[in-house]
Image (cartoon, rainbow, N blue to C red):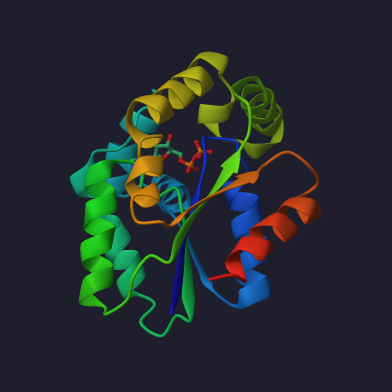
Length: 190
Ligand code: ADP
């Protein structure tokens, strides 16, 4: 089983690339943002809780996110590989993922990070907000808060995976196809 953490700030292109890689390698794609949005749409208790954080550009609390992620992984016992998109976003989440993988006699093989400048991110997210219907993309203040939250809590995970020799940075600016090729070049060395 090959497990990849697709990493990068909001707007880096994780969701787009995860969908391409999922088809290419026949892996399962788990996006915590998508699962939260699904719950919001279906008016679940989890959705209401997540929304109160997402609307402000903040992270949803770890305990909630970790329990949800575990449930998603358990739905896919026969996966050949999993692409984690939007998880882990804190050190506690990275520890939880490592324990979960241990219990499955598996491991995170690599963190592959899409690198994109902050101002490019803001422009991409504002552009996406015109059509995505995502309230967190419609407001520049919320976008900037998400990026700030990324630097406060998430960016540090680079060190976590670097210490295990599992960190790979990839230029996230270019066409979708070019970026898929860059990611595939890393994946094929694993
Ligand atoms: P982005 O485009 O900002 O990367 P996502 O769709 O991955 O967006 O996530 C949207 C929002 O969902 C985040 O801003 C955050 O509030 C919440 N969220 C997603 N993943 C996590 C996580 N691992 N931990 C906490 N909150 C999360």
